[in-house]
Amino acid sequence: MSVPEVREYLLRREAECREMAARAVAPALRKIHESLADQFAARAEKAKDEAA
Image 1 (cartoon, rainbow, N blue to C red):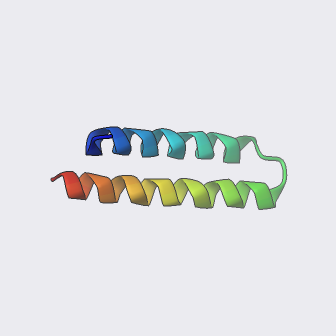
Image 2: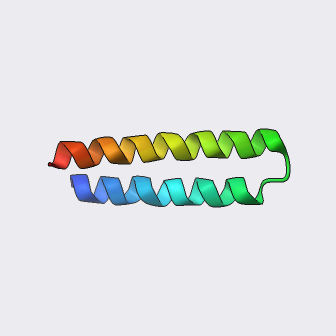
């Protein structure tokens, strides 16, 4: 996968995690999904920096 493809994948996963966090009933699940989304966002940003 190229760097742009990896970044796009990570951003998609971030969006999915944010959506799951929004739908989560249990606060613990919401927190887990928000944490995962933050991790995917950070990795996407790192991929963006590497591409530049």
